[in-house]
Length: 145
Image (tube, rainbow, N blue to C red):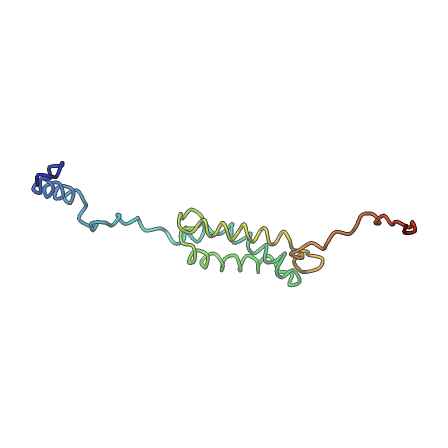
């Protein structure tokens, strides 16, 4: 190739590719990352403990306050919720893949529940009522000319 400004040596490229392939560990296929060490499922479920306690507390206060959940019922709910959250969001809040979604759900829930009127037992309206006039409009009682 006389028009090519780069000299490409196919034999050198093949040798370089063979050298790179030799550096890849045998248990890892080309193009794949090495396998992560297996995580301890019990530790992952335990990591959800404080999150579950808070979630059950929100459930008690905002969703079903009339049920008056007892402490042992709350503990049982939190204990049952932890494995479910770990199944949905493996690795807990430290997992780079799922953590942003879970944080978004928690923040959105916090915003929504902050708009809950416990006395009325429902959420506050989405729109504010129109403002009332602060003073009466000026009336012109003069006769027309």
